[in-house]
Image (cartoon, rainbow, N blue to C red; front, side, top):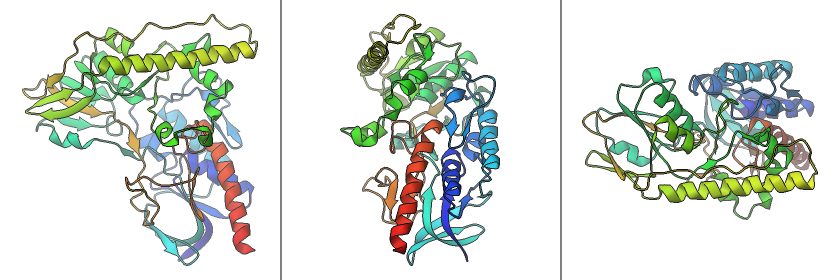
Length: 411
């Protein structure tokens, strides 16, 4: 049985940021990783995916992008290399190829059981991220036989898709990117659209992330929100890491030939059934986008910024007056369904009473219980908490809390 002050579970950006903060505070720790450093980026993303945030926004404690393309977007090999270089520079004590099987209370600390031995520790940091599992709805089990079912974690490229039509369920970043890739590859693609957030890639000469960063939108704190649970469920922006595309929104997909339908509500008698709310979802998304852009304009005016392009408003999302309410799944009309319906954490090995009635981890801005922390969840402390650029500030806060808690226990 090995003993150490702190165990960090997960060696992605969150775990490595926390490791650097603990190293700076001389806290003995180890980072346990089931695969290799940046495992999710290297094994659980599709081939053409690029970060949705510009390279300049890949900032971690004591480390930032230093290449010659700050306004570009890293592909998966580049982000994997970036994080591994960060681990090397910070001398992160990572143990790769070790899977955590159980975390339980032991005396005044925690027992962490793994495939390569057990540990006793005072503190545990859960840094496995918010995207450990694809969030596939139960109705996926009603698909007729013979139809392939994939998620953004199992989809790699259009080459693996059977000839025939594809139904992509979900119109946030993953769904729109995959739909665009498949229609370009020659597939007939139908996109089931629910709640989504439409934004342009560029606005008034700057990337949308520049506006969100500079105006303070990304620094909005969780305790400033009227309904933080709702804020944490907000879908990813309809973006793609490609400055040559003004916007990967529904209008762009429609021009490519993608058929737009409403939210998938059922599968019955070989047919997918869709709600009639497509126009309402699109109108609401357009309204939110315009409010966001108006806020940027007001901020720019207050700051007396010069050199900006004029304010712009974009065409509303165009939808058919009578979109299809059902789609035949049998007779080879649809051969593949891709569930771009979001992700969720995976804490099945956490055997502690720290979950709510819906199975979600309870935490107060990252503090789960005495000595137990979580890092990398959406809007954990700030709006940017789920981004590479956001985990650093959260890790600093939690590291300080850990030090203070340790001092209080020793007193």
